[in-house]
Length: 395
Image 1 (cartoon, rainbow, N blue to C red):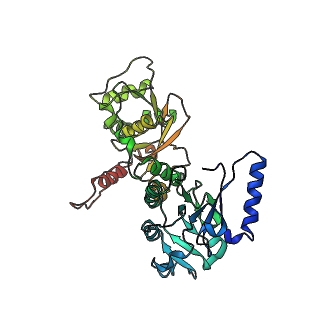
Image 2 (image 1 turned 60 degrees about the vertical axis):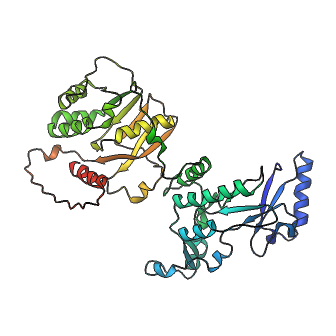
């Protein structure tokens, strides 16, 4: 493969030959190989040979799928009057995934993470609706397999449009909606890892692993004055699966003492013990039984310095977008963090660690309350959803 790789829309260049010769001359003068020039096959360009270029590149959406994908803009009308066109991302992906390129020249396939040019065209825009990192990876998996099978060594490329074309919503660059999910999808596709495969959950936790639990000082003081809160928190922690997997102890003497009264199996640790990880609990929250276990597994699998739970399932300010697959949070969790011996060189967010947040109950002390709850649960219901509901009630 040549040392320089250029992609152009040849029909946008008045004299392709002059342009190409100029670049070759500049490269030669600087001791570089001649550039490998790729023609974007759009706006009438059908073959790179017509322009003296070395290869052709698929231009996804250059013909808006040629009517092969159903128009859905009428479904959005009450919410947004679109005069242009709207297609489903899933359907567009499936259309291009099904194409079988047959050319007598080197031909690179292309993919978009999303498309929405309303910033430029307003209601006349062309939009690909409901793109997701998961479907993006499914599409990319097909293109990578095609490149491996069809293209020669040194030229097994897939072109992504684009890194940061914000005006057309075609960007891999991390944003506040999906975080690093699209970039992660590329890494997983290249590594042969399924989008939904949670490989870290297979991580074994060595029995010799030592985990310390540390409470914030304000929380410790609340435990001191609110016996009911203390009982709920420590009973909740005692039910964690991690206690049967490795050594757990509490950094504060008061916490060690309280834990001993809520768990018959907890072994009180004396003196200073060096821990591999410290779970910091900074405010009132409750855990699903496997939450701490999953955070430790993630820390071990990725050698992460800091792991935080992103699933505050009963937080009204934590929207569905915060739980989108491989979405990476941009905020430091104010409730729980798992720290590796003070090592913060890498940060991971564990969406499988279910945490339920709560407010202080000290103001409610002494006020008689009667709460009745009815939960309708069918035989086909998801037990994890029932567990989430019950933990929300506890919180």
